[in-house]
Image 1 (tube, one colour):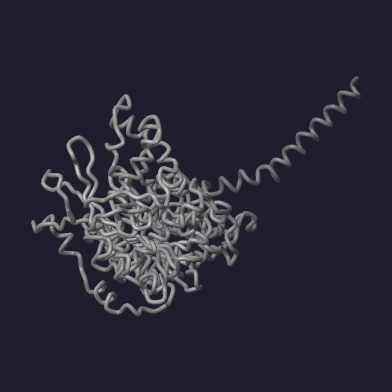
Image 2: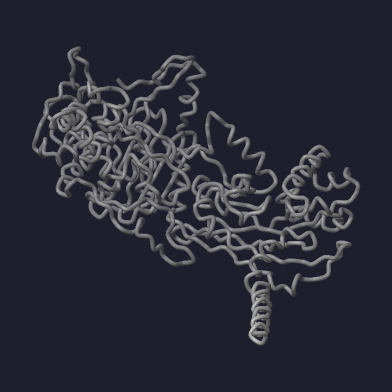
Length: 627
């Protein structure tokens, strides 16, 4: 028995030692690596990688890097020194110094944080010689963005210091580090940022450096960010921004066969280089708090407008699918559509006469589409049921919801349903189709963003299928492998119904058939399009005031095997063909032909400013209303 007990004691002691060694040498590795930064005897130094480069669809370099230098501080190591001299070197006030040092202490007494960010190379060279006088401070090299273009600020986005929310969300970042905040810098932050390297330095009780902690066992090398190629055509983007100078609104161009975004122009915009360097904060504040022009507000993705007459194309398709009309069905227009007991009238500029789906689209007849819409909803037992059917057809185009794509922001828009009206406005289903008749012409409660308008147009160009709009083309020269972007999605509308609608859009440019864009043809290019004019209201001095209408235009070209689908929205731009239509034709010619032959049209657009129009709420001048 004693002999057995001795064996058990020896085995137990051996197991304990083996377990302890396993813990110290294997399992404890991760614990030690995690707790190193909290050890006051170990200094952590980061090696920041180069951020990935960004190229356009044609290989043009858009975003590179430039060296930058941050003054870092470790509060517990700061000793008494000449503060006025230090502040003079850093070009800050003593008051700013106190605020910065207190912020660093609140973050951590032991962990380094940024004291002054993004110094230029010439400032670094001068300061480096004197840093030995200021204990607790040192200079950390890192890279900043260098924009090789002056356009596409809303597309490219910017990087800036992490905030408290970023730090709570992702433990990878330390205070003072940089993160993508908007645009592709945000969407592809993980790919672009790379992986920072880490060195752990052992110090003694006198704060003297002894060397690498455990011979560098836990040190890691920096891994540079990955280069990405985006779908934007930088020449087309630049041309679009040029056309939109002194105007407000957006241009979105999409390649129908892939869903790749060719241009994403939000106006007004700004030069992305303004948000680089030590002036970044001041420049951003000036841009962000410009509440009138709103240059940091991406109108292409966030502004929700009534789509106006371009939406009639969808109403035609739904009516054809629901078999309440055929391509030959006609409705009589008498300068508008009269409805309701009070004889209300929805005016029309088509010239009156019998209209079918083709010339109804070409001449943008309000009466035709009011009749078609009414018959769709009235086909069912209740307006609620009919509106739900209508809404589901429209939503099958990917509208009324987020795209869930790789853009950093966006809005859902609004496609109302029967449930929406019953729950919001008309309890117990006490309503009639005529209460919603404005939806027939893209007014009422329908709202879409410019990118949704362009996407709608691309779907029509494809005769009923679409690819989710996206902005990434390759990562490290490897094409994207994402079914959400590369697999087509189909609408509820049969392919055969698209042909008469497309013919109507083609006739929009026909002089012989009196199309609404007959003066906007591009030589040698078959374009299909649709003009639009949307009412525009604002509250001025507590009064609901009608402002000058918005100008809208959608188009795709060529008619067969289309290469580009486009939506242009010009705020307060009068009627569709006046500004949005001209800009659309110029953009299409630039993309398909690489040169502009419509010189007179280009000159008119480039020289025209709508700033006086935007000033009318303050100037008191009358607004232009298209009756």
